[in-house]
Length: 126
Image (cartoon, rainbow, N blue to C red; front, side, top):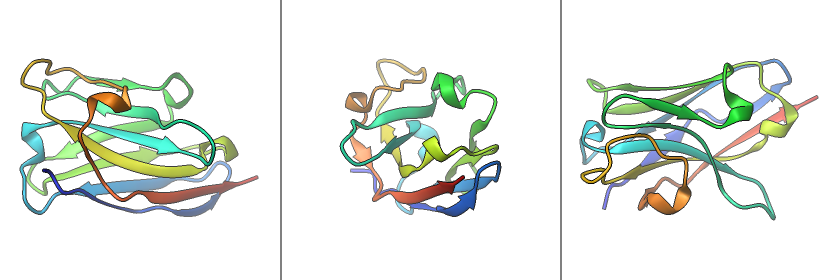
């Protein structure tokens, strides 16, 4: 079981930026396919950005051009750089990892991921 810890959430005004980080102290994240997800109260968890072990990325349409997912293999850390934030981006953000031995590409389906962090709150005010 991969243990993941997110950080970097906070409160910003619309148009602002945040960078979320996700680190694993026990496992090499480069061996996994990774993703960022978000969830608000009463709604299903949705995929925001994903990166496959092949380094191909995938984004939720509403975040394309604003969010960037990246990995720092040396620091064993996954990032989500968020710019031009909007109030509708307000949510708890989670990083997740999945074994991708059968499919090495990105995936935005939460059901495909088996390891999750505890989440970090992002609040964007208008």
